[in-house]
Image 1: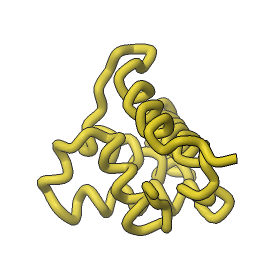
Image 2: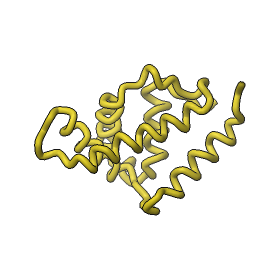
Image 3: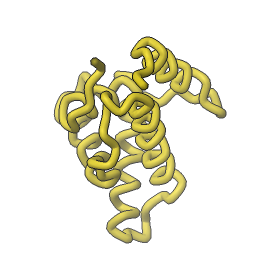
Length: 119
């Protein structure tokens, strides 16, 4: 059964605005956390495990919301480590992306590079 897209996008908005700590992440901050995730995956002892976990949890939560309708995003084909690396590259590639909300940047990446769609 298809869920209305407006409900899905509203949910994305609400999830981004009502985080437990009321912290707003921009793309630059999330990219930093994802760099820590990549260090952790490579078993780098200097990685910050908390920040690595924030990256993985944040990306996973956005994927979960996008997959409320299977037409939007096929999560079975997504690899969290690749997504973290792609996110860091996406933000570094164009400096203006650093100030985007983390949610917007993740959605743009999922749509642009990982086959997810908003339609």
